[in-house]
Length: 292
Image: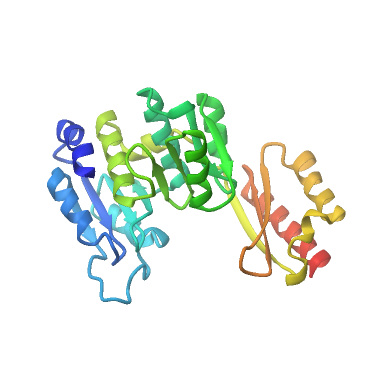
């Protein structure tokens, strides 16, 4: 199915020197990705395509990008593509070895679809954990960024409810409802390749469409019975508001409880990595003191 969607454009714009590195994570895409790329005439080099039943995602794929970065640079490839074990996610590496995460993919895809008048309601659905840079990109390009709770099911729910056709998560789980009702790593990678070839620019230049802000995530260990008290604790809320209003004028604070562990996740974004690391550690320690 995906071959039919992309074959005309890819055949039209494919270049002899365009070569993609594929990391299939010893998982679900280890055969099908290679078949699709062969049939589309995309040159590729493949790694981690020898599953043995227990090596899925083992130091490879979209959750471990170090090997693919090295592979792209050593082989001077145009692009690296990493799928996860079950094949629903995709992240990329540009020709310089830099990561292209899900937020960057959403920016690239939404800009492309908007240019073609194919981005429904000029809106992208992301989650509260998406980078602040995505929101700034949206403001600059007149694209609305809707945010949901963390989880692709919430993203899909929002898309179906309001008729949006593009959404996803930073992890590379991208949903394009015009083609598929769920995330699919191969679909995501082919969309990226089509855009690269059509625009005839390098992956690093294409990814430069968005500025990704440094993001620090610290876990505060708390008493499991007090997990939801951070919302009603006035001292904690005052501390958060003080951070938001007086310190992080060009940043963001997101606090949420873990769904499975006695933890409060403290995420802070901003331009200065040293400062946001300091503030995130201070806030996490404060929450532990109050709710430990």
